[in-house]
Length: 399
Image (cartoon, rainbow, N blue to C red; front, side, top):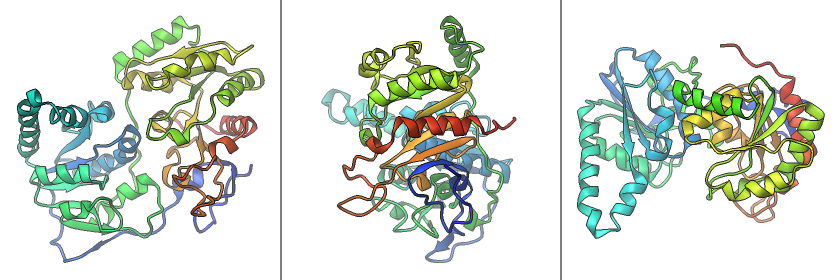
């Protein structure tokens, strides 16, 4: 269980329990602009970041906003975001505007004749909002067909994205400046920042922190007081994932067993944080507890989830939005990794520990892939408990 040596050419340890620091520090080399030469970058009046996608990905894109605000303090800085992740960027002091892409609402609207006209009007209003921003520079760290649509709708003259082979779904056709990476295997935070570096934008000081709205923090604190957890050391456990990421789920009975042992051996009160997708698991999780307190919380919003995670002594879960939100809040985290590659998706801020079980796939030979290999089942309760013990010995950073 020794931390991985930072001297490795890339942080790719064997299966085990590791301090995540080598993943966080790994920088595989410089990115570069490819294609036809472009004019030098002039100080922009307004910059648009296109990061629509899921909550965890938007958290990985936040350092782009931090670096751009430092580089261009007088510029207006806007963000185009999907509806489900708007709570991550709305209210941020470094942003001047947020443009919400109502993907689910508009997608369903096109399927209903009675809503097609109103949906078209909403999309046009979204486009007008982008045009009113006066953006003359755009960065697309997402690199998908959805972000390509926004790139084109925006009308921004200079649009920086990934070169062909480093983005998906022909996204490169929607951008004017193309950035090639030193490798496809790099952390998503480092990848997003790579869009800035070839243009001479400093990225060394880019650490981002999610700020929980005061009313959401007050609501979370009131609930913790009601549950008798105020002032106690408690462990946040998130047993779920999105439906798309079901292969990343750890068996429910092991979450219950871990909760029992964390309470008995580490003195941590286990608290299950559940969303609508995890609600069906509630009885099975709590029914598996014998001596540990039976506590499950369903936060009313993404903001309130942040309020609970900010108060936890530690958070444990698989590669999912709550894990990355806790890390962004600087709560100590233990991430359970099997199908997803920790080189790409490890928690980015210390203190953090990863439990890695990268079994070779019998179909493709990769240690991490989307094929149905039972990697999460290979993570034992002892592994997870060792992760909690290791992260408990790390120091929570100040500030």
